[in-house]
Image (cartoon, rainbow, N blue to C red; front, side):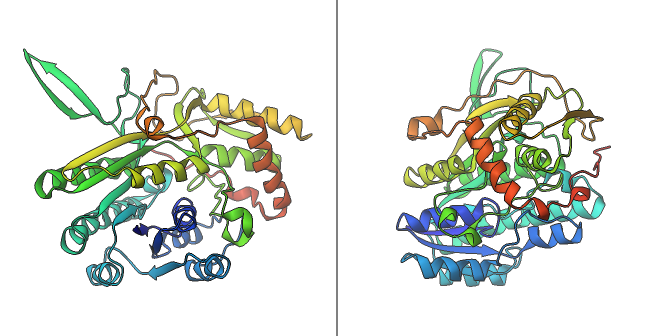
Length: 382
């Protein structure tokens, strides 16, 4: 297929592009370096210094027969969107091109405004571009399990059958986001559902849990191809942050009681899930939703696992409960369904001590690059 990866410079976008190219697809990537710019402006940075998107593509194209084509520009700009879609008319569009951080979205008014305008305008432009230039293309959008919140009932896979006063119907599962970022993802889903009904789009919405990990099959060939690995509180996912904190000798920052439970997955499984969604597309006029995670853990579970892996490596890892800067339930019921991707053939990579020590050994080799003052600043929701 011809596959357009939007947000192709990101933690997930770049590994996705390489994985699909490696499997023989014709891939183009689009990015405007928003995440890099925001990180620089907030004085945070990934653990590894990485080439820009054009240079990444050049490195990849030197070692792979299946080329990746870069486009650098802002997907809020309709003229640029037209240029991309007429130069590379896709069979499928993978939409990662959003401001990806819940804490950043809660930082200040300007951050909130940027999150709203970027995420919703880009999603709308993707929809309009597919309708105008690639009406048969399958849209795969990265959603988030955070759309659901933590309801006191089982979380179904996107949809809920409701019986009310003797009648029944099927609705999107009720959603109650815990940050402005997650609220924009809810609005993305609503936009896609609206235009699926209006225009017969084919859409798969992947409700993904927090991702962890560094290595993919492709990045192991050349370390310049590694993904962005953030360890700060704005852009780093919790398990990636904990592994860096453990190596740096910084107490693991458990927010409040630490009972917050979510569904997690290895970055290798993200690539599997996206690939399976592309290989088994939704039908025209269908919004298909998959809950994309492998295992559920509380924050305390993760901290204890990192502490145990650190002990195997001879590290003394302290776990420290701190005042929770977020407004969230710290103890709650959490039982989400996630059978759709398993049924399509997902073969999960569980979180093991071996996986954690591999990540932490890589971090140890870059320990001198860790800026401890960037780890935690206490961005508050209230």
